[in-house]
Image (cartoon, rainbow, N blue to C red; front, side, top):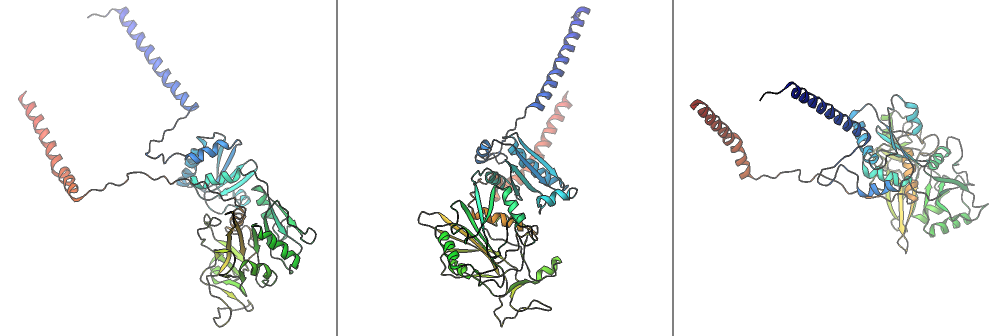
Length: 449
């Protein structure tokens, strides 16, 4: 069939038009891909997607969320952070993620109190949360704590030389109180002599290292406060046990004589043996997320009365090389088993709890050190995180959203000996024989042509 010149020109024009339209469609699809995104999780149990609980929480958050990650130039770590944040951004587009290298910006890392590589700082509606665990469970629960709009007041007892939450001295708690403020927790002081009642809106009472003995009327007011199922954080110091003895006896706690000394601190360049280290934490809501060690300068050991009114759980314990030194801490010191000294590990913190008639849990914490959250030592190790976690736990701000673990289904294949033999013979002999036979058949057919 002969094609005329006009027909040939028409076919060429048609091909050009088709090419232009095809390229235009490709360009349009490329532009649409930059404007809209769509992801599908084809795994059997949607293990690469957010759970329904997390999506429901994101739907309640009306304000933007800022996520700042402090991660070194580690591609694997940064990819893990980016992928985790991307799951949340997919359902809430006003989430921003900024990754900062703490090695190049040590000023910002120091200002934020960063202690671990890959730590996240979350900000929402003027509140702040730090996060060291990179998983959906931890991030969702941190967001839930940020949404808590209830006004909480932490009240510090004063009038006996206690630590001042608004003070700037080395032993005061001014920096710690500012960190509480960032989490929406207000703080104030109360002198029970001037105001002979504890305010009803007190979410937590803190007694931090009183230097003089409490009056009987003050002790009575505190006991009445505790009898109502209210929370308490009691921070003591070595050789001050008699000052808080009316309270510790009532709680079923006793401060051991002497000061905890720890020979392990020399390995970390700390010459003062009275600095006790805690490197491992129990599986408790207040400590289970902590990863870095915490430092306690001049701590007292604690012991529990088994017949006490509260259920006690060890919260902080020193290392085995520690002991309670009862003599003067000068020159060469060593453990003396013939005295009242106790060999480590030594408990320096207990969490106390008791359920009332309605089933509501009362929470208390007693620690043998008040310096660890002071202005001088708050930035050491996990001290800040530990202090904040204790406050959150005592305030019942630890209601966790349980995210069910998502594991891959059918990741293992169980093969018995019979099938192993069949697979082995098949790959070693049967398949090669089939290929050879097919080759021979094709060769014979071509030879007959």
